[in-house]
Length: 339
Image 1 (spheres, one colour):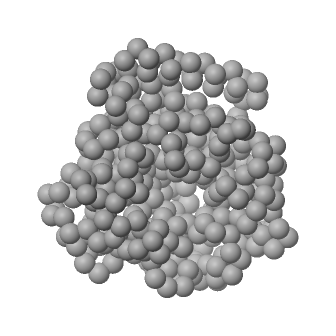
Image 2 (cartoon, rainbow, N blue to C red):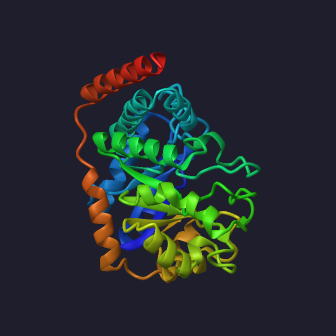
Image 3 (cartoon, rainbow, N blue to C red):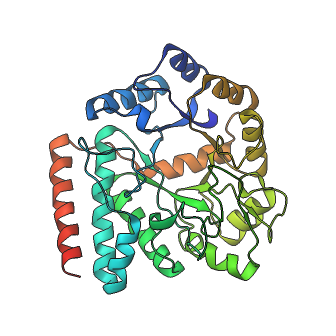
């Protein structure tokens, strides 16, 4: 198994993609808007990936946070509220706000279950700081670490009820970044004490099955390398201080925060301590380069993958999914209206 999660070029697999998948057996795949047209088409695509790999529990990822980060959109799928809505509800009534979040994220996860998607890249556990770039914004569960942790846990609970694996991100925290790591390399100059506040939600949810790194330099921990490429940050902070022992993936290697050929960045991130690299854009040259440069997934990586995917289970019939989702949305709305 190749320790890489690959994007795909379009709505169906190309012959080149099929040949590559058969040859290198990537750990998983991630879907974007370019891969999504209709429920039937997405289901055919995920089925083809499972058939090619021979893995029913294949990690097929998506970014479906709610709010402005959503790959499944109307008219085929309903719109989901941003995370910050539940922080506002929680501030008024913690018990009902949390319960509404569990219902919402279980209902959201059922959209994925119906399509054969097994992993959702959420929750965002970043704690936004005043003056930071707004790339996180209302994707976060507010600005209080304790609330972020509580509602992040509610999200993971809802996902797990539906059989979907969650990914905490962007470990060890994107909330202080003054730049969008899609466009530039952020440098955070905050003190250790300030960073300890930022990592608190990740520490509280260190039991999460998967996590995604931040392409950010934290001067207090490593002035030279961003977290994704820093052995010190991964060993001492993510694995050590935070205590995360699940499957650790990079954020997208194509982001402008990183500099260099994709295959080289992939190898560097694994050498730093990441378990798997995320390469999102479906460019055949980059995927072939990673296949040539990366080693076979070691036993520790495969064990973490196996442990994470125990959350996944075979989906129920479509009619049952639709009925359960409708009930959950009704419960969410009732709870939100009662606050």
